[in-house]
Structure formats: structure tokens, C-alpha cells
Length: 199
Ligand code: GLN
Image (cartoon, rainbow, N blue to C red; front, side):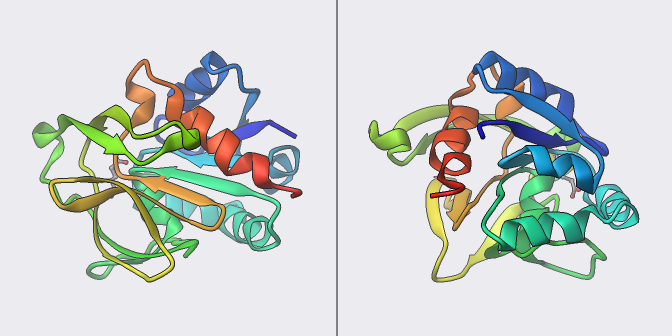
């Protein structure tokens, strides 16, 4: 099953859907637990983590995503806000529906406000066994990873902080691949994470 969902509660899920389709991947919007049944991978997009936490709890999506993930039948890719939600902890006191799929701590808005958004090239380690990949990363009120546990792979860094990390069936980055024309990371998520479901 190669279909990927994008969590469509708030944030820039539409751009992820477009990018997945550009990459030739079947993509659907996910708003209810039942809709999760038809996908093997889920992208959690950038957005506002407190708002999305509230909505996820209201619709029972945090529980449903956790159950599917822990049963090994769902891969998850969190970008920016999505990265915050897939990690285990946040610096400071925030009431977020963190899923805890990656043993890492993040600091929200660590690079300053929206006006201090920036772009930078990062180098991602051996994607699809094809050697390092240079990728234009767009950072918008990005979270910063301040701690990673032993089982976490750091696939790319920016200015000394991890920018793309993974653990198990979960991939997370603090930048926005959907704001470029480059769909290689979406394809990477499908090939290296979602395609492992059912192995
Ligand atoms: N600042 C947002 C938050 O903490 C995340 C930023 C983003 O997803 N672009 O929710």
C-alpha cells in the first residue's frame, strides 16, 4: 500500500499533498481516525502546534496515530510543527499532544519570529543509498533539536543542530520541503519508511 496521508487539521497540508502527487505518490487528506486506515504513511505538516494538539485530541487522532504507529503499521514524517509533535519532549511548559516516536527534545521557535525565517543548504546523509544529497531547506519559526536519545539517527544538521532525524518508522525535520520544488524527501519517506510497513 503506497498511499500517504497528510494530517489536514491546520497548517500547510495542501502543499504536501501537491508535492506527494508531483512525486507520483497517491496522497489523501486525513481528518479522522477512520481515514488513517487507508494509508501506510502520514505527513504531519508545519503549522501551529498548540492549535493542532487541541484538534488532534478533540478528534481522537493523537490516540489513533499512536496506536497505528506502535503496532508497526504506520510510518510518520513530521515537518517543523510536525517534528515537534513526533518528538518526546519540548523545552518549557507547553501543553502539546506529543507522540513520542522520536526520543528527542525540541525548543519551539528557537530561531526567532516569522520575520527571521531563512533558507540554507543542508546535506542529507545517503538518501536511498545514493550518497549525500544537498537540499535547500526553508526554516520558518523552526524548532531546534536540543537533545537526541541514543537510538536517534541524525541525517542532516544546520549550524550544529540536527535538522533531519529518524528513529524506527519516524522521520522528522525542522524545515519545509513542501515550499521548494524538490520532492526527493517525500519520495525518500515513501521508499525508506512507508514502504517498510508489512515487511
Ligand atoms: N512555531 C510553530 C509551533 O511551535 C511551528 C512552526 C512551523 O511549523 N512552521 O507550533
